[in-house]
Amino acid sequence: MNRGKLHEYFLKYPRIGKKVRELFYMITVPSKKEREKIKFEIHLAEHCNLNCKCCNNFSPLANEEYLNYDIFLRDIQRMKELFGGEAEQITLMGGEPLLNRDICNIICKVRHAFSKCKLVVVTNGILLLNMPIDFWTCCFDNQVEISVSYYPIKLEIEKIKSVAKKNNVEIKFEIENGTITENYTERIPLDLEGKQNKKLNFKMCYKSNNCIQLKDGKLYTCSLIPNIVHFNNYFCENLDITEDDYVDIYKAKSKEEIIKKLNTPPAFCKYCDWANMESGIKWGISKKDKEEWAEL
Image (cartoon, rainbow, N blue to C red; front, side, top):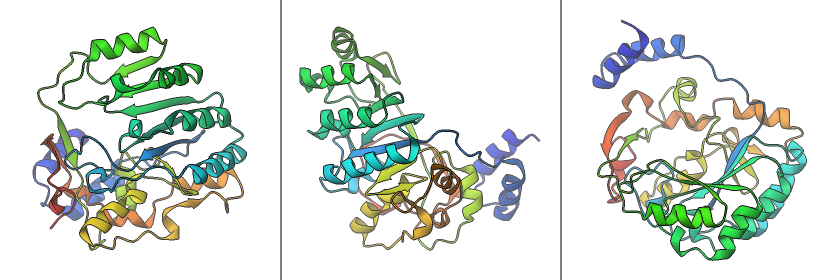
């Protein structure tokens, strides 16, 4: 039986032979390579206007909260100093980033600091037709790509495309037919006791060293870590974040130090129960039940 078949078998029978699964994955899953160039996310809003079930940024649990602009200005300047203004990609997202009225100022500051990198705004698309002309002009002037995520909601895609084309802004949709009748997500439950294999989780996870988030002077190898605050606050939990879970960009002495740290399993990985990952969960609106995110 090849690795793919074994993986399917493990997903079908998630509680059978956990130690065997861990050993199998530790041997067969290759270690992640350090990045040649940094890529990172900046979340412009913690909350969202869609509130998806099992959202891995915990947006349905977040209060209305926006990026602290003053902290952002200091952080993006420090990132420019550390990385010489070079990055693979910077993604502005959330929550829903279009909720932030400072989005144009933020785009301009990011582009000024990183003049050549790919700059993307990820949105659910709901507010695009309500955005003022200044937004579209800003996107064109700063070479911003707009990426519209995949949800089973009604969007006037042709109208959105028309506005983007009129303003010479590149826009990409995860779907092209206007309406999705069904969509599926996955759930990697939290182990509230923190007893999982952090090294294995880091190797398995698509977010580690990929969904890197810059927040309040710190870089996190996985965006779940800084956003766990919303889960903790809503459910009165205490999944702790330690100094092992981030890089302080004001203490870091070089980009090489940062790149190496981001490719190291953080302590927080102990909270993710990859062995019991569920796929094929039908999309829906969050009921804010704890079991959407945690193994109870």
